[in-house]
Image (cartoon, rainbow, N blue to C red; front, top):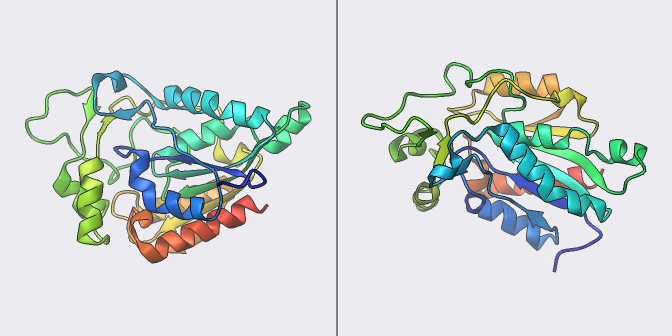
Length: 250
């Protein structure tokens, strides 16, 4: 049973992914008696309901989801991967322990852990080199798929073949409207401790951009010698659990 005395871990997944992609990380955290919450974002799925959905819709969704726990007085660490970092930043602004205490409210977000993450919606499209064309023959431009061969090459290239295949089977579509220019909070404005895990061999979110984002956020940097998906790697997952545990202890 999860420990009620420990902070909740709120996991915000990346584009094309679902919470089950992070099962090894979730399982490890739960074995350490953390309550882990991992909502499926409205920007990601395998039906037409994702059309037109942006990070603002996902932000509203997750804020509504986590508020009842904060109102119970629970502390929360927000862990995000890739695109999920944008949502994590916007969700956290105004809901930190410090800000809620100033309003006479219980509970709050005490830390953020970004994993190879985007942070703020400062451009409609990811920077050059962090996106790619629609696959040949794809006609529904309201949503973007992630072709299996591309995912294997740039998302999961250093994972064991069995875990690659497992992750590929779980991939879904991403709303093409995922990001827009509207954002309320910059990561540097979020009043909670921040850690950024840089994946130094990442082929989709360039490491140099990760370092820049971490610096702009005022985050402590942790480096991993791996690609974009450390949660599929055994030793790297142990490091992530250690990083999250330390964030929860602040």
